[in-house]
Length: 182
Image 1 (cartoon, rainbow, N blue to C red):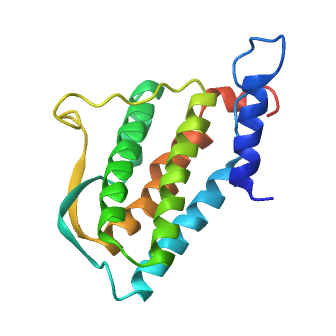
Image 2 (image 1 turned 60 degrees about the vertical axis):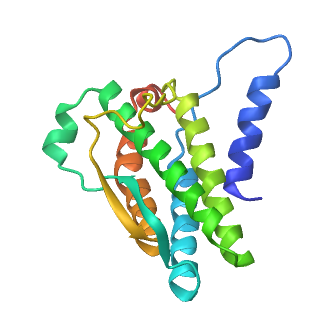
């Protein structure tokens, strides 16, 4: 069984547990994230190996992946969560637009998987009581650190690095995961 499917089934069982209105149990196992990172790497490798779809019709906005640990640690948990959620939203938008430009079936499969994984990470964050990101009317809030990429391989590299960096930092330091044993 794939870890992603297991995580989804765990969330589904928690939602449908009869007679209980308990919130979703936190998903603190970083192996789930590691699985998503590996699949993002697979998508990046597939894109690099394919001759099709290397350029994007127009540059897309992506989250900054560089982490200044001094700055990150000075942010409160809410600010860190908002940064990760807005970054996931940007990646979802950018990878969704990439999907529309690719005709290769194998690449479509990797891109669809990346989109599903971003959704699943959002569900993991929800299990940790981290609110979903609601973009402002014009897109990303002005304070968010972003940049633009013009190739599919750059986009997928940003996806991998964002998961390895800010998402990993957020999940590994979430207070609810350090209460008792999870």
